[in-house]
Image 1 (cartoon, rainbow, N blue to C red):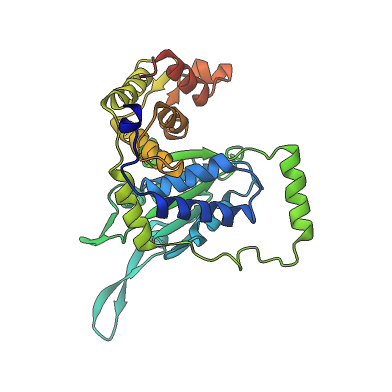
Image 2 (spheres, rainbow, N blue to C red):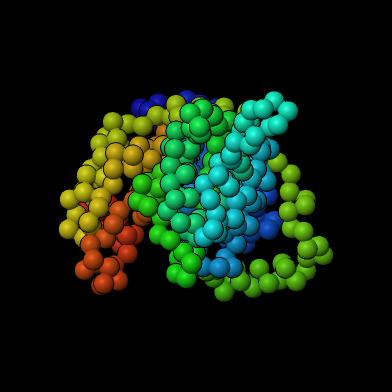
Length: 325
């Protein structure tokens, strides 16, 4: 009976092959970070934007560039700076003397995979220019609406330790990111492997031999496949309880929104796909809870002073709620 319930309903051959190829491609250059790479692939399959946080030098930008290079899609990189204006990202209307009319010249945001480097370096005015495009996959400029081509993914990096010349991201923008992935320092063995690999490398251009694994059409069709995965009602209720508890937790000033509930379910489906399953388990939900919630919740000032982290509170919430059997 159990076998009948958990029998594979979907052919995941193509998806699993693609995931393995992307991982193998990244492993040629990136040492370790398997958990982060899984979440990056899951974010793309779940149609979500991803915020990557880590100190300088832990290969945040390189990892994002490698993910972008493994997909045959239009790629743009935007370096955020304090003097960056909204029009530098979105585009602007330019007067054409031949036609005596204004023509819209699109900015670098018009692409499939957009890498925003050091996203917290631009002021609020520039950050707010991303609100509409990140949530609705469209832009309204001079009364004209421009739809983004599928897939449209923003991969953004930020440095958590530097405060000079940086701006805190607005809560409304943070909520638009599916995941916040924290890149940690490598272990000693990983660091030795990184140094050895760099020392033995004959060329300085690491990305030259990386070829795309997936096309734009592949991403769109795989997303449709993942969307149709099975989630039991008790797991939907389990997710809702986690988010509900975050709103009533004494350590939190701000809990998760309904968008966070939907993000956990979509991310859990994508993680299940990476693991070769077409159904979601409680482990998938608890695995994605921290990266989905850590940037959406806000600690109370006294808990911040005590050195409590959002991940600590998320772990406590998950421990409190009975796991469905």
